[in-house]
Length: 228
Image 1 (cartoon, rainbow, N blue to C red):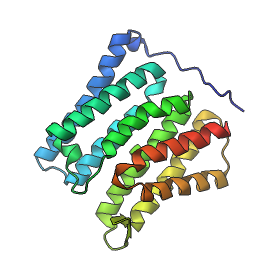
Image 2: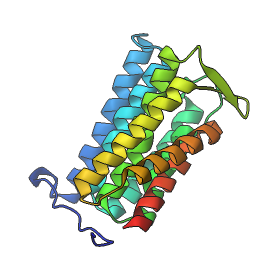
Image 3: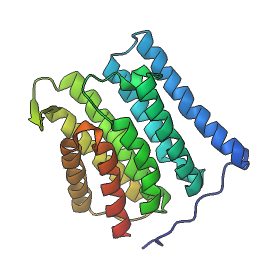
Image 4: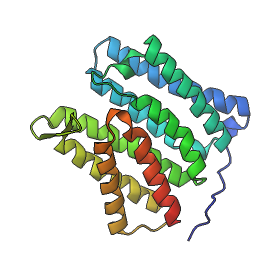
């Protein structure tokens, strides 16, 4: 059984400087946002696909921040990105990530989750698994649902959902939890992985308006923290 608090790995040599670590992290996120915005403006990708490209790439990058940033740095960046997302939403700066037709605060909730999870766990692997549930599982669910799930759909609280999209979320969620088990050394039974993935998929369905971007990472972080 691992210790409750896992010591963070040393920074890579080029991130020893505090300012440099923060700067490179912000530039990486900003670069991904610019790529997504460029593709959206050039109509290289459908609006939802562009939005999910940003969701998957930025979210997956953020999931591994504890491996080279301190918890306080992550909290600082979470607050900064929350302000940035709100400014972008109201000033329409990055229109690609706000191009979805239905009303949603998903980007705001995700920015909140980035910082909130640091108060639930001090474990790098738990943090990564929690955020990857949204960046990968939710992102791929939306892509699969949009591309292939038009035929098998259902409605939750007035919002259309895709059976194939939900299945994609469930499978990806289980793979993320399996990867967490292998990488962290914390053994998870197949039943636990399945049950937690089903619970996450249920919340993803019920968390309309983008609220799932906050609730799913909190659920997974809480469950894995209690287990350890």
